Length: 195
Image (cartoon, rainbow, N blue to C red; front, side, top):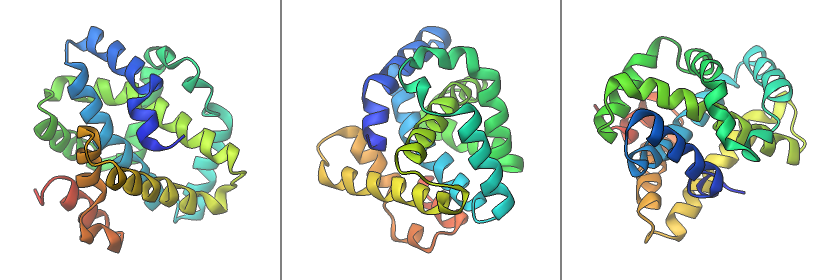
């Protein structure tokens, strides 16, 4: 399963419907948010995994809490919202409010709702990474490559089917030559139009 399948498939749709009911935000807005937030979270994790201690911590978290079983029952994300919030605190650190602000501006979802919705999405995204890690038998040393592969695969898929509006979003998020340098600034720049 690739990243686009996760977002547009059963799991992503169920989470989007749950968030729509809970926060009164349209399902399409939530799927658009997922399309931007998922690669962003994965990119941040990839950057962190360059540090062997961070890679080890991520590896342990994936093995302990994120084996992919949440993909079988995505409605459980609501129960794991608090955990999702602490995942995001760790991933984005001091940039969390800046990231949330940019996502809010780009999706039209208000700042008061963006954090809680992201907190619902985070366990799903971590579960997806955990499942990929398990099926590819990756240890902490290979996490950077695995995460890079997920992003690269999503980019290819987005280019292969440009007729899907979600792929347009993903194409914009993952495209942009400046991202190839791998710099976080470049990634955020291509994500948010250099804001």
